[in-house]
Length: 265
Image (cartoon, rainbow, N blue to C red):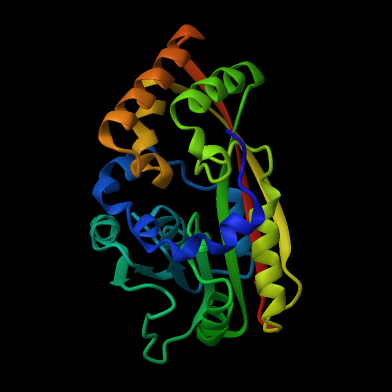
């Protein structure tokens, strides 16, 4: 599975069926998807807690990190099932796409978007973020890239090449081979708006080990996997599990968290 290419991520937001496909796996998403490093949150809150708008908040994974540090967090999420899960964790959520969301004059110190900014229109997104940010406020988009050990990657490449060859350019797992285009697309869109200072790029790395069951449990939460017909998804999940079992029953993932942040000009 190759990583994403920049142009693909720029137009991904137009696929609303895919963008809003996560709700039916909300509980699985919450159970299996990784969170974000403490160092990322500390960097964004270096000046102290404030009002945070979490765009595409999903199940509230990112929002909870900021709420736990004293921030007043409001989530915006287009999928009502994902929003309902976030509310179970104490996050206040309004259901809407960010582009169409009515701020009702409310402003924020920080606009965040974890694993979701590629679903936002690259022109309207920065403009809307700027409109709801306080002077000197910041926009912060971040996402996790998954990178396998070489032996595991080669084995999984063979499985995906056989059972899901269409994933070649748009695979949601984004296995680290070409992680920068998404960041480059974000930086270019923010810069083109002329509303923010020069975007800054930060990276954080975490190593985690997953059992076969843990890894395959999370596969249906990725939008490209979820779009497969049930029988093809089942075959893919079974084959991926077989590969991991053959290689010891544990998969080691290097999670690289990318952060793009820019302050209001």
